[in-house]
Length: 123
Image 1 (cartoon, rainbow, N blue to C red):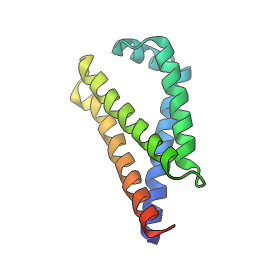
Image 2 (image 1 turned 120 degrees about the vertical axis):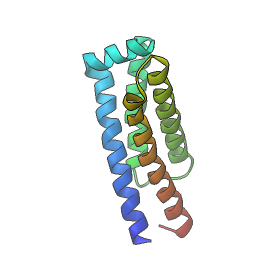
Image 3 (image 1 turned 135 degrees about the vertical axis):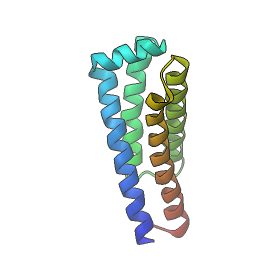
């Protein structure tokens, strides 16, 4: 059980650091602005996505939040990551470029699996 919690927190923190840096870039980086334009996204969507990622990270990291809010945060990140992967491929980016989304998805799924196990086994 202790190992499960350690893996949960490490995977969750790594994923959340990744999403915080991504959200910050979406809000403040000219390069991220160009990337969103490359995908064909409107500029307001870039801002919404950055804010939503900050909110999702807050929910994942808050130990007092469990149940549906955390489940929705995980679901939102899965949808965002898969959509990002598809956006890369649809806009002509290589599979190598798009594969970073799959790495993020893998880390998120480890976090989710460990979260579920800690909920079933008791905190």
